[in-house]
Length: 479
Image 1 (tube, rainbow, N blue to C red):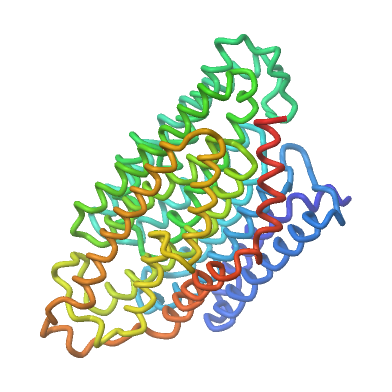
Image 2 (cartoon, rainbow, N blue to C red):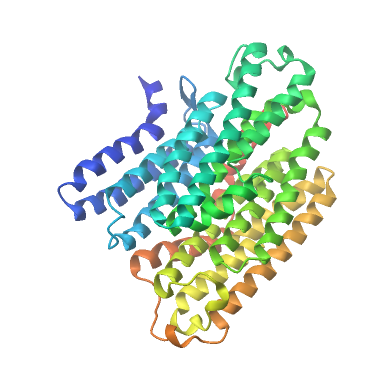
């Protein structure tokens, strides 16, 4: 009976979506209370399980292809946490007629699909959950209700074809030679040496497509994240692409010992470095604030890929910490952007100016989140970036550490320029009567900003569960 509980992180959000559909027909107020309270319940439930797992009080639950281990549950907790804030934030859009029950139902379904993706080692089940999350997030992008949103959605879905072809092709080879689709049950000695490398690359570029890995990440991610409603941008950037990154490493770590660490680390971490540098350079060239942040997602994903690519316990720990931190500061920045667009209906940074006086609280939060993403001391981004920097040097890759530092400097210059233009530039007369956003928007922004500070000062609050999960995941690559 207890084995069925392994399905709870997936089934409960789906049941919540059905309940939302029913409740919404009778009372909008009750529905709002239910949405927030239920998402909080999901977060507390998953967090409690993760703590018990880390303390050794329970063994990982499993049912069929679903395994609730440490790394999967870390991602699930992050999904539910950002989901709670995004749902609350989204209430600000309910005065727009098209933000009806469908939006919140789809969002709860997305939570369930992302949780399923995070908690399996079966490549086909990963693909099914990832494609389900893709379709649902595509529906949510369309809530942007613009021609650009429709075009971005079409590109987003079209890119999925490449991902499906690569992963399906790899799955055929895996099953024919290995006799299983579950990577934890795979005996890599049954796979021909040449095919081991081929499989690793098929899964790396296949699942990496939705993780924002270049080159395909440059095609779909900026437009999808820029044209989606801000709360959906925060979700896609904050956690959906990270779930895909975890799928990548689950799929390729099993091949690390057989291929040879030198080769595979250089390929995987090397692509991470390309993501960092190309992403931040493209961000510097942007005038649209949402596209600027979208390219920074590509860049920040690079840090995570570098850490996971190196695959030492410390590097994986740094990557998981950066996944958490990126969810906080990038989610915060996208929500702030949504609040600014709501107030002034502008997206180009040079059409803004002087907003510090009208929106002081928003400006402070934007500055803190920007500094956090840049790796500024005493903020959360500096902690994870320092861990990744030291892990790269200890693993014998000082060049990677140097290039990551250069990426952080460029990130700082880009975001500080955006902050100066938007908030301290020449005031625009038509914005003289704007103000900070309503409480529905401001509360999630303040929570995310506060956590950027708290985790920068007290990183040990999460170090236990993250180190536990990192050792569990890295042991697959380095048994």
